[in-house]
Amino acid sequence: MGRSRYYGPFGIHQCFLKKWAIDDPVLNTVIGIRALARYRDHRRTLKRYNANFNEAYWRRVCYLERRNREAGIFR
Image (cartoon, rainbow, N blue to C red; front, top):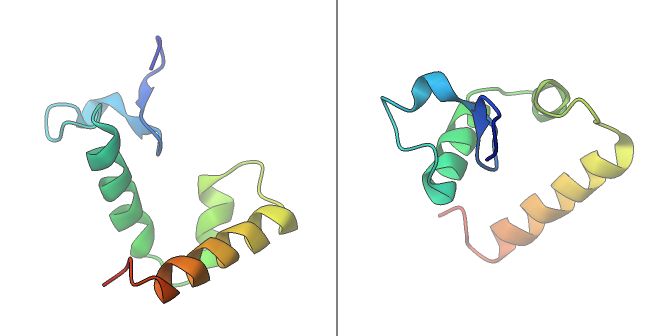
């Protein structure tokens, strides 16, 4: 985590530390996924989330989503 104002895999801002234990990687990921799930346009959402967005990144995310849905992870 270092000296950054952002914590965990989803880079949640430190102002949320009082509300949630965002320094916990699992909770940080759950909160990040729920925040991103509010948006309907996944491509636009990922562009906002990742400044290094490109087509390879988009294809990788789509692949992981498809694989995880088939494995039943999102149930």
